[in-house]
Length: 153
Image (cartoon, rainbow, N blue to C red; front, side, top):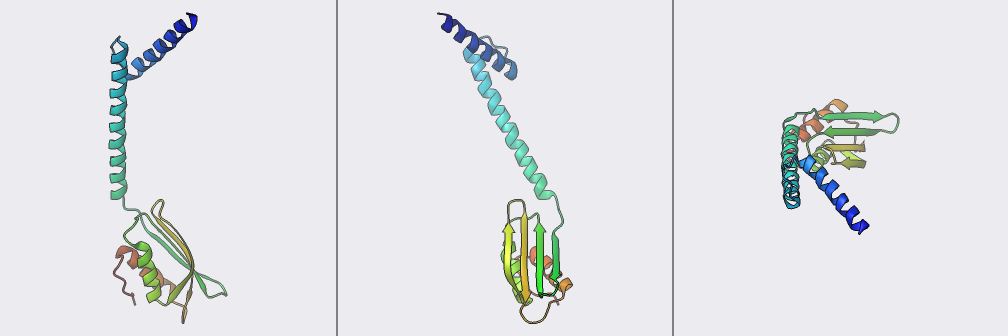
């Protein structure tokens, strides 16, 4: 009998908490629970709207693309770092094709598309060492127009 009373007290306290959270004015248990469901659904809708608004803001935000090309002294190797906030659109393929057209072979690369596009690569020139500035411009062009290729001379 005592455990039944304690159980009722626990349920009543939880219903009072739920009623205060949902701002329910009802005194019936079933109405308080229904108000709780409505409140949860309202919160879900608000969250979905906020996520949509956040994704639209991120899409409209134009963050710069970073391209760094450096020579490793003595080895004839190049370190190429690319950071872009845009995902997809065939960026990796476009960048690799433009490097190939410039006579640069990628020896090793690490790519991530978790938060935008990030690539860090070690490359070597096939024939002569390419001009760093032209190579950087070519990578920028490959990012701006993926799939179009074409070497900037």
